Length: 562
Ligand code: BGC
Image (tube, rainbow, N blue to C red):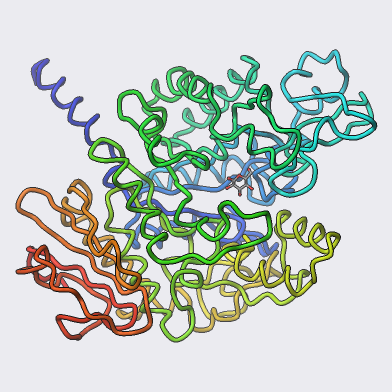
């Protein structure tokens, strides 16, 4: 191959990086598969299930934190970035997972928690030891005022954003729980230390990172309000991009590492600052408009009604903003959100229909789809009735605070029943065996009793199951480049019942149409759909000019594959 050929090949690889064609699966290891009977999922359990993931057709995993941690926030409080929490296994188990993934052609994104550490991390222990500690400035310390905290800022997980430390008489800042002190990103040593952590994992063979809470790194103290949510002075503030550019240049780019970043606080119109292929800082963004539409702009612990148009815009505004150069991470669920079939579909009578419709709605859009464990089975929210069944620090804090503020137990439980993060953290439903086949012991959080009917074993044998539909969709996306590289154009934007879009690449044209309601809906005679034939759908028959309850249809100019 001559020099020009090599240059051409490299340019082509840069224009078409692996993650554009990929479907990514998110694993929450604590709830995925327990191999040693202690009731907690682990790396040996994950290793055992990799063939299942390969069969589903995924190309990469995002593995939630498995680092050593006291688990105040289920691993998002890291005690040692270079060690594995014994409950999950050992570094050798992690290397096994990476090796088995490699043999299946599956890449791995590690979860990088860079905004904060655990209060048990050696850096923090050193920082808190004295005001003269060389690491004092690695965290954010302030003197209190009038015997109270330095200001009235509140944490994401409730209460003051400051924790008083008797040893030195100062308080440290924590945006999340009091056991998650924020790192001081102004300190170059901190930034270098985090870059070393990245290199450590890239050297072990991970392909990149899911960047946790990354838009909070820069604190704008000069403009901080006197009270209210601390996020107001640290969410996507000027200077953030400088930190991220340095991170990309010094640690990520030399490895060709892929990145997917949580992007709360980034409005669609600023998306390209983050994901422009040349000047941006990340490859993919997780956006929040479509999942937080019921809580955005309302006080903690409260919700507001939402409508389908807002939900759809949560996707399509971003598609427009990303245009032809940007690329998005597409998702419906993760470990912080409730189950999508319960929130956006119908987890009762129309569970299969609505879970498959939702799958088609997002999986064939322009971007890289992420599937959260159990979503491919149509897993639903847990039927928890008492606070004792919840485990999440955020839920428990909220419960305590709300009762103290005079709200009733019933009201808090009603909120948690539709918003608690534990709904997505119940054990993966492998079978109808006790504890859903997740563990031989007592699970750390109860399995959903619906595992008797909603489980991987049963669904694998049923061609009409949610799982089988996911496999077909993933195959379809792989078969037709238009679903990956084609243009995106929304249709039915004003409908409060239907949603849809077109994907076009050269002569290949496809349309996805979805009915988000339990009633039959006439399908408007859109010129764009004329002449298209059914390629795939979640209903076997049906009138050509109407969509049944939660029906989805993929239409196209390509031959029928269904
Ligand atoms: C993670 C949460 C976590 C928080 C603090 C989030 O973005 O996804 O699970 O509680 O960051 O690390």
